[in-house]
Length: 387
Image: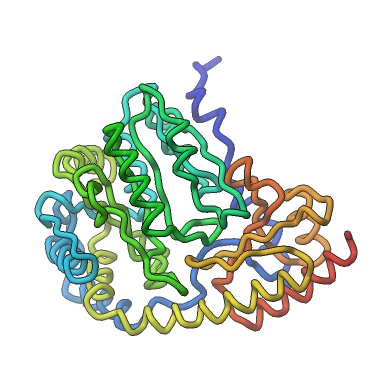
């Protein structure tokens, strides 16, 4: 029996380019992965213990669709104390299944068919699909290594049309490690105010900044009432598999996001929410130790990539380096595939993050310095061979 075709939007959306080579690498016992952006640290014991204790007490029920009240209260207190941002935990904060769900909910809550969302690239692989799945149209703004992959506000101005609904901003950036200046972000906010646009800001890497202080976008003049702020626990607290994120923003937008969330996810798992509560209340020192180690690794990997002949700027945040491989004469996919097969090192081709990522690869330094140094030796050997 011939069935009706499935969604053309889904069929036309490529699979994530991040995991393309990982099945092959998994069969190589001596492969070194600089691929997945996942901390190599265990979730701190105090956080795991909070989860275990909640299980022992039988806390295995649903929570409110908005999320565990204690966790929303703690997030609200954290944002007041650390960012001077005041959100009502009862109706302006929503706990989600990771920041990925929060991004999906934001797009579906805001967009009508044909609405445009301006999205700087290179960017995380799920951004454009989330826009498309919500019926929107991604409008790509390329960034360059010369500008350390910071978006040019003038390019945003030039891309705005009557159909533009929102700007999607994410600093520190995955995949480039770029950070934004206060002046640049304030200019972007002014553009949003002038054209009455929403801003969706993904700040999951806000704690992972090294040389400058992170600028929280909704704290800027004119931003608060039009910004949907996304954050979570995966990166700073080594809690990727727990899948706990959150959104904060205008009450009407958060309510619309909650409505979708209640029909699709209902709530994030309570055990993970209890763990996140412990992390935000008592996990600062554990998090800070990890961040200090990432900073050491950052300097090792950038120095090694440059020494190997792969020009790489010093990323200001996250845990990624984004070196140019153009001098090898290989495409980013060719480079990544041959590096894996010939030297057993996993990196992600830059074009997985948008067309302007071609000519680069993403290297995650969320692994031990020993593995990073060994990977750098292999990369240098490979570059010398192909060059």
